[in-house]
Length: 131
Image 1 (tube, one colour):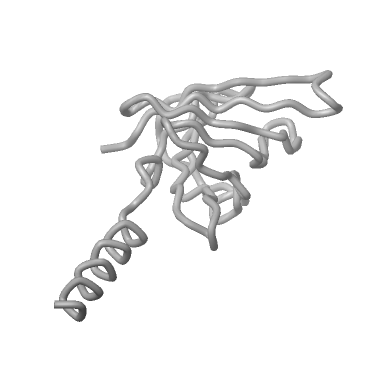
Image 2 (cartoon, helix red, strand yellow):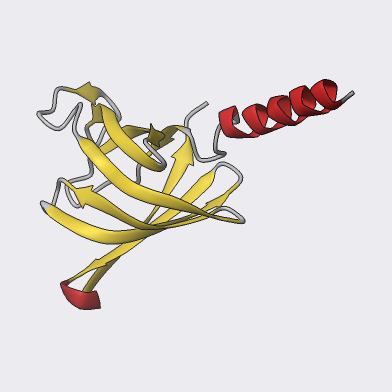
């Protein structure tokens, strides 16, 4: 009985540990200052979440080559619960700035916001899940 209880507990813990975070997946960014947008894949990187640009698109929606494909756009993001994430960084290639950021997940929408220079310059964006 004790062995069965231990096995059930271990299975439950492993299931929770292996469950994907709801924000994991592919996200379409909002168009940047140049009208370009991208697809960012968010996945675990250690105990935190990171996002890598996997495709870039021009203003017309056509896929385009970009030196930024393969680069990390989001890193060190920590899940806080209730769909909120914080303590992370987001790099905006169009401005070449890294923002201290947070994210809020609501269904297939991801509100991404952040600031630089101690809050002097802030930016926000809404990303859509790619299905």
